[in-house]
Amino acid sequence: MSDDRSKGFRRGEEFLSMFSRGLEFTKELVQENEKLRKKILFLEQEQSTAAHNPKDWDGLRAELLARIESLENEKRGTIARLHEVEEENRHFADRYLEVEEENNNLANLYVASFQLHSTLRMNEVVSIILEIVINLIGAEIFAIYAVDENSGAIAPIAAEGFEVKRFPSARLGSGLIGEAVASGQLYTAEAGSAEDDMTPIVCIPLRVQEQPVGAIVIHRLLAQKDGFTALDHELFTLLAGHAATALFSARLYSQSERKLNTIQGFLELLKD
Amino acid sequence: MRQLLTVTLRGLGAVEFVEAKDGMDALRKLTAHEIHLALVDINMPVLDGLKLISLMRNDPKLQSIPVIVVTTEGGAREHEKALELGACAYVTKPIRAARLLEVVKEALGIRAE
Image 1 (cartoon, helix red, strand yellow):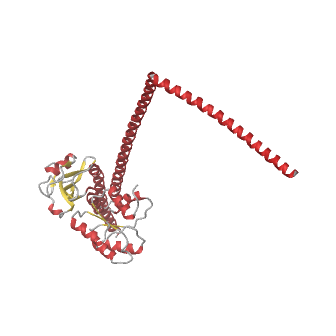
Image 2: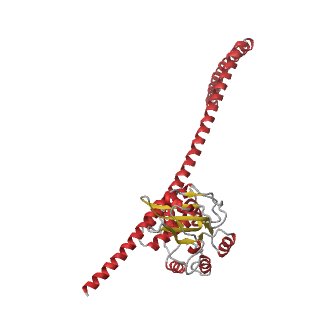
Image 3: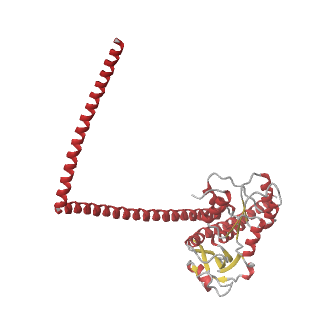
């Protein structure tokens, strides 16, 4: 009996506790509801004021338009800068290619000049000049001429494309070759402008300190070569100076060698 | 020309060059060294470039070596013949360093910068 009563008390207490929690929760809901009502009322008032006051709308619109304009300007500026950077990039890429090309050209010129001064043997110097003209300039028919100091005759000493004897001799100061060698002026005509294979398109006079040494005369370029490039003109200048010096040195060397042999021969005779 | 090619190809970096004075010398050196690429002229003394390529292609030890022909011969016939024999590229003279480097890099499978 007493157990039933205590159970009834416990359940009553539980019910009361649940009821009081429900009461608290309901109060919180009512308060929240009140807050939301106030918020809705405030917003409705704001909306109604804004709708009835076009000036505020205009202000807002103007503000937004100004912002859009500012963003548009910023975008235009960014695009312009992007184009500038792209242009700069292109310019640097072009410059890089130019520098690389110049670098390669300098390497070619270095090899050419190095080779020209790598020997004092006349036949080797001549063969190096032939190699340079074929491999770097791309000539198919050409000849190397040497000046005879005593007679002033300019005769071919080596050639490519035709036999040496097919190339005509010249005299200092007369004809295209003779005038070029005498004046030291490089002669160039347009590639492919020659009437025949014996008409020169380039004559590079070879001179050492105003003294004419010879000439390189080009008659025809290789079929795949259209015309002369900036590098070709650099090579003409290089050959005009360095090939002349190399030929001159080789000639002096062979003369001195001959004289040395003669003197040695005499000495041998005197010894005997 | 050999020196010019050597100077030009230094642009590839650490590369070792083996030079040959003619076609027969080239064949001997190809067999004696470990070669990864051959640059061959058509007009060579003793053994011309086309014969050299043909011999290389028939030799099991040499047939996989890529060959680039560097020549004055600009005609289509020589070009086709060289490619038929197994050359991987055909470069005509005058030698232009940029073009040669490009072709050599391609033959060696070096990616362009």
